[in-house]
Image (tube, rainbow, N blue to C red):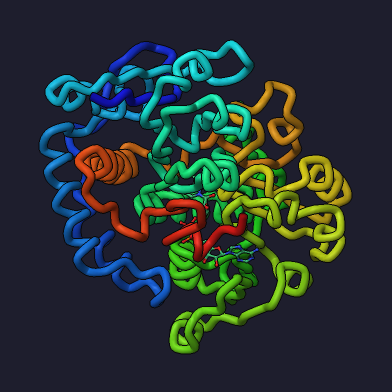
Amino acid sequence: MAKILCVLYPDPQAGYPPKYIRDLQPSLKGPYAEELLSLPEKIRPSEAVVKHENEIYEAFLKEQKNQLLGCVSGKLGLEKWCKDNGHELIVVSDKDGKDSDFDKYLPEADVFITQPFWPAYLTKERIQKAKNLKIAITAGIGSDHVDLKAAAEAGISVVEATGSNSISVAEHIVMMALSLVRNYLPAHALARNGVWNIADCVSRSYDLANMRFGAVGSGRIGYAVLKRMKAFGCELHYTQRHRLPEAVEKELGLTFHKTPEEMAPHMDIISAHIPLYPQTRNLFNEAFFAKVNHGTYFINCARGELVDMDALKKAQEEGKIAAYAGDVWFPQPAPADHPWRTMPFNGMTPHMSGTSLSAQARYISITHEMLKNFLAGKPIPEDYYIVKGDQLSGTGAQSYKL
Ligand code: NAD
């Protein structure tokens, strides 16, 4: 019997379950699989993995239907399976401060599962107290809430549902690019408030077509974003740790830049899609913003700590940044007085892009699979690994540094 500790986001304010607006989930089987298999070589999953993911995803949809499972009462859909198989499932939401429920149950847990949207920070100090912990599963993508170095030193595996919600995030980023450039949110606010002043709506509104779009990171999310931005007629640029194959660059008409600083002065829109690790923390700092053009749009749905909070605020006040949008903050949940909440013309959302109901079905089905395989002593696909044994492995070795 294993003790499985899940730290999940709180239920909807109006209670659980919510009133669902649709009966069914659209099946993501076809297009999602095709898109995963069309990824550039180094980040393309094997056909066998995609086929298997589709099978477990379809089976999951039949059983769990269209449900909110990422919150406390949803229990990641694990309650019945744990009961039937004799595992103890502990689900909490209280995760910060020394006396949190997370701290209370962690020392006994064999397995820890959390989602980046409501990250339970598995720090070095917590790892030292988690004597039974063997695996940290990220239900989603992005495992920076775990101190990866400390996990590797303690021999705790870290895995995530690689590729599971990359298209969900890419769609959110495209939505943000459109809404910032076209001035959608302020114009909508005027409409809601009974105002009909066209000049106020359009004095900050442009077309996306022909704008220069720069991706910082072109992994699974960045690549999906670039593909979608091509459809809007943007001029596409990117910077990335591992340069993409020439054929891919040609197909999308991509211009490669060695560093974000080198790319910045040539862009109208910059969007970040890289993981957070020690070398990328505060990558977007005062020196970076000094390089951007006056009036650049900036989007970050990767991680809040990639950006120096005050440097961004200053760049926006100076007009270097025309408008900022993203769904990632630090810490999460963000304090009520976080300056990004009230910056003029911002298009921020709470961290939600990767946990749409569509995304949940995919990353939760993969999470179940990883958990079941781990407890049965079966292998977990290499792509899902961030840390294995005492080192980075799989996606971890490709995308992170210790
Ligand atoms: P990925 O591993 O497929 O791609 C990341 C890419 O970043 C890799 O190709 C790597 O080469 C590149 N990279 C790493 N460090 C770099 C650097 N310093 N400069 C340039 N390129 C660098 O990951 P992904 O699925 O595309 O996700 C990217 C990140 O997005 C995740 O790590 C996570 O933090 C975040 N994310 C956010 C959400 C959300 O809901 N907002 C959901 C999923 C992922």
